[in-house]
Length: 283
Image (cartoon, rainbow, N blue to C red; front, side, top):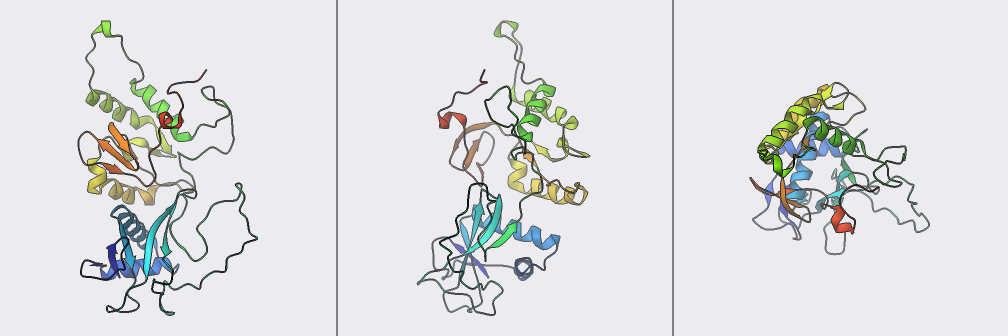
């Protein structure tokens, strides 16, 4: 298999061969026989291919013919990564004995999914990263009304963020007449110290998976730490890391930081100001 440039036929000298062990891990996970290591390898491969604007080309037809293409995709409603087969009159099909071969599903026009039905990848798609059992950013099951907004439930992540800022004391600003020295570094240091007392899962403190710069994310340290913590994470809770960044600007899926390369996200960045809403608390 190869990594190939997106929007191409998958042919040519620029395609990058996948190492044999990585290809084997991907196949095992695809057919449902993989272990945790295979899962992690599949997640990394699909995420990196998507961020790097690459597609995956299957080698089941050999090196001379145009290869069947698998595209890394992200289903935001289900928070799920999967591989999507490109089909069409100009696209090659997988061989019948290929682990990536799937019969074409017949479209069922009469089946309509309501907004209450859970979103999931279509049949025949490869689900690499299953939805986490519980995430701090997910909407609470009970739609309790919050004092700050009308008829809107507050995610756990927002409540924990408010608590973190309060414990760190960075939500209190002295008047200009007090002539108090302030710096971004001092505020981030206060938040980092406060993270030792904020739980993100039973027995797991935020400080064990918390960063305030983009460099650890780019260098792979964030993923390495999560790999190390995963065996110790309590069941029913998703291993998660958190990066608090000072953003100079954002555009689409990219966040421009002050001290390094931009951070690329899976989904577009949303701000209340882009939705025509006022910033601040509502009374």
